[in-house]
Length: 449
Image (cartoon, rainbow, N blue to C red; front, side):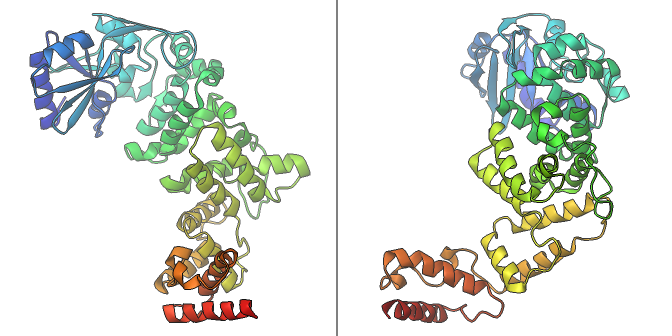
């Protein structure tokens, strides 16, 4: 296995300082063998953290404990960083983290505490040889994913492995061994034991799974695995309710759920969460009224609930929920020009992403393969406003607070917002400081009267 020269040199230096052999393991070995580039470098060996600290004293390596319980360290060497873990055995009760951890000198025991065989191939730094205690190279050759032990045992230890299974299938483009797939279905309920933060982290990785190794539609493959094993219905039940919900044939080829997946398929990475949630309220609206009307408005509310449940930040929740709220804006492409310009001004921070979402939504319909005319128009108007240097926020106005001192304080914000709106209008003559000052003067005179 060919390694980057700087990585190889650093690891050989490290190995000479330690009593026992050290091994590369996990994603770095897997990806390198698949011909993919990998950046997370995990190493392991028999030596305990205490032995490592003692061995690395006065060396060019710096070690820092990251998890005493898991016997994991970060080791830095110049610009490189490695994660070292002592060979270990694990016991689980409930959740993601092992309840009991013990060191071992057996590479086989260390391999069998991992999740999937493709992540349990070792590369001996000292000997330059691969060590494959579980015949995982066969899985790599067949491009399949199977568990390191009996699948039921592996998933019962850690429910997060269900989402990792889907993610690896998407990132690598691999299929899943049937026995492993069936066990994942049987144990899908264990995802309920996993902290929402961990679910969110895996979901975020799944939504960009295709970008990891440039596997076409890897994110869709991963989402379909999540759906097939039953995890998606547990973490996003609002989404899977859309299965079988037919939509107008002149607008949509697919049911609500499939349309959502197709929209995610065509969406660029930065808006895929919004694409996943853009029609999240359609099932709710349909079950309530038999129609999909107001799904954009209800979608904003439900998106906030879903993202709060998954512990997204307030900033992320605000941005994604606004994209969901406005993804239907000017659906018939009939908004008056100044109305559209004011809308763009008020939402300038999300307009580029909103345009992308509208495009993906249109392509995901399966009916409208051409460009979304509303999005095309919005893009043109937005570009025109940027060229015209239209202010998009109060801070972009040519006037400042000192120019408003003759107005009562409670009127200043109102005046600024009105000026900002006037600046958005087509052929507005309020682009210069002089014109804006004149506008302020007129407002002051109107107030005095």
